[in-house]
Length: 231
Image (cartoon, rainbow, N blue to C red; front, side):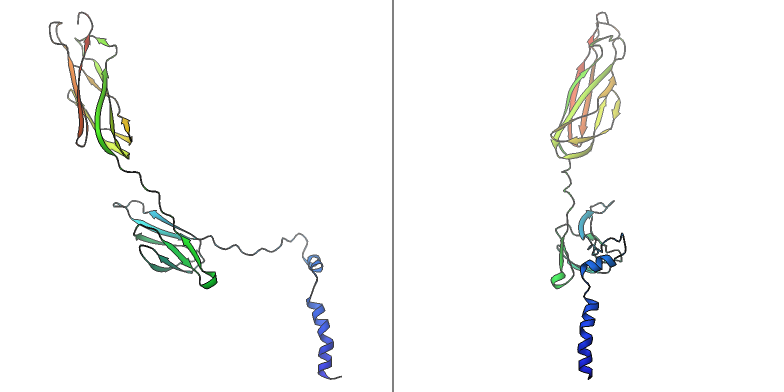
């Protein structure tokens, strides 16, 4: 028998040894073994974020979920290339605000990832008017020979959203609180001052004048007390 003949006889035996039917493979698998799964591909993400503590505001481009060491090609208001670190991420600091895309891989395996932008910040408040809406004492008729608490209420009107500082002033007293303004109008904190007194009913009725202002917007108001009989 020559070598060619021997090889021909061996070939069927080799094929038989390699081509194991699925049922036999299943029987050969260890009992309780879970089927093998392909490793999950990284979930690539890209975000344009506001850098904390920056004034004026700066933006960082945060790229995560890529393969470790992978070359990332960034296009947008700025274009550059960066290699992801071992964890598959990289942050490019102080980039121009705008829309970016990141390409990774090549050819048929190229992946394009869009970069989300931070939400547009609400417009800063622009206050167009201040109004003192009322004043009162408790009770309505008071003893005008004694100092009385007079409570003033006010509001601001304008556009935008955000914190504003303002001032109440009157009767030698002043406070400077702040309020979270939300258009179209927002109430202020009440302002309480002591009224002047009169020594006799023949004297003028006491009055209290206060002012509410923020920036160049202001309003003033004069409240006249109601004196109880005999005061």
